[in-house]
Length: 264
Image (tube, rainbow, N blue to C red; front, side):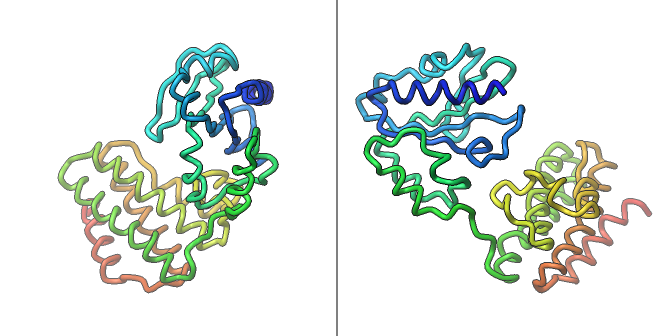
């Protein structure tokens, strides 16, 4: 894979950069889950003086030709390498080490993550993190964190469809779906990919659940959104009951009647 070659070029560039104190790789390649469609992803910790002099686009171009470099909503620079390979680089300073300590998980073995660690500080920080984030502790926490948010977004989506704000309803449905996938993972005790619950869902969740989740998707058209609402409500009730938390039965019944009224 081209990505493996690019990763080795990043390693060489890091070792050759005297202004770099440490670097780590995260994501699919660090986890050992990557394929030819995976990104390469790094955090780079420079001295303050070196970071002030650095041009992220030029640094990325040292790895391989880039067709474009942009900064995403999380503050990382994304470089588009040949064959549409994405490289995600956080150009940080040593003052940002504290952010690593706040990660909910490291997601991979420490030795696979460390690219460079001149001071040894990075290894200590990563070793102190859990490899996997924890799922909600018990049914009541699961209901508060995901089931409640699912039913809240679902009710909002219903009102937006009724109002005729179909694009906004389509956007809100995305929040419904995300919490619904978390609920499905809890119901089936498949929580390895907890932070990104849709990752590998087709392999890790039961065929019935995958079909139910797929039925809860839609384009931005009224009939499709109403069908997705009906499917999401059914799948949400099933997984909520499997999780074991108290079900707001009256709310489910009222929502079901309201959604079904369109078809009468």
